[in-house]
Image 1 (spheres, one colour):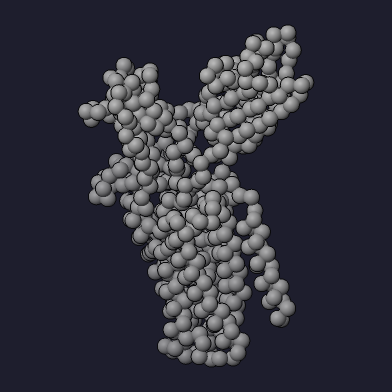
Image 2: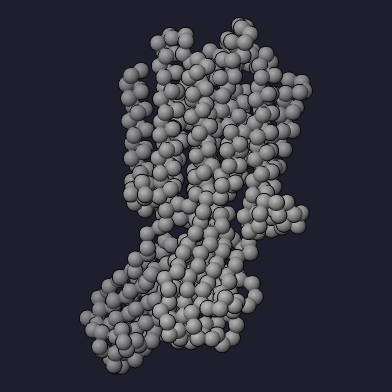
Length: 548
């Protein structure tokens, strides 16, 4: 037995190490600005036709706003802000013709892929004579209301998960009828908390999406727009449908005949999975490059926490029922549930740790961000509370193994549930807190030698969107030897490609092209084709990977 436990511990440690060392794609759970046009604090010589802001993730088409004002505070933008067709990461707004010379302020607000509002400001000049102030900012405050409503939601889901676990596995069939009333009370309480959270969350998200107060969010027109025209609204509707499926099947299970109980429990399980999956589909996971992986991981994290905390709630319910009125049926259910819950709790904790490490690895670019960011410090507090809850659970297991009848007791069970409720509150806060900003992108520097010629290619900043491609052939001052230099940018294994002729930049002493040649993340092929004055062709292809 000891060797088995040591083997299990070794497996756990090994999995943690493997997942920690995995080369994962970094994710910013809130949108961050990659670049702007005009550039921040730039003093342009020509009047810009529009202002664009490019982000590191997709932006939801839910009333993005860009307001451009001159030094007197007058608006110079015209029409509504829009998302560019070639990239859903770029938001633009048209400007009035012939701007006056001076300094302009740009205030923007968008809804990022995870459904959170992000806003900021920057300044640029048009033939400005004064210095342009450094007044750039990028804000994504944690919405308190959205965080608070997650608390009753997660507590309610944990109660429902506990009842599901009890009916499917923990409680023996002979005891289910005697405990039906207690389990019904627990599941009804959980459903009421979930319904309350759904309503409050819809109001809070309507206010956030439309940038209005909670009272104004009660307007029917705004609510209908949120329900029918937003990603959140559609997911909210499906969550309500899943809750309805669970409620109807639960009604037939608890209030009708006991026949076909397996079918009823199966439908209840489908409803619960639908609620948790729809919950995991809205949030930080939607900002990931591999959305399916991050969503499934988030769902496993939520489900594991719900099963663990819900299972402890069931144990406490059985304990209190047994103390209130002793019966052999309830005693059988209590003893059996304690024995059966131990491996379930171990599996839930293991899943919770694994999924938590994987999700955390997606959000942090360095270990120091765990200690310097609000998200990281909150995560450390959550890890500490999980550890405390785990120690209490291990204490219960050890006490049972030592045949101690006074443990678990009401105090230790309430302590474990209290720790679980704190964990759920911290999870609600984390789901609405901006993760640390990703590191600044670094230019790609590539070199190739063929036919006694050297091609030096630099791509900056090497992101999705606008990039500068610099090509240096042999030495920087041999422009006369080349009559044409072309560049072909193609998406790997697709028909997406762009061909352009590079211009000679006399000041930089190299061939240069600037534009939106890279439209999405993944592998790309950049082909440089140069034709010399004596009609010699030099051609080579560079393979690159764009991750942001």
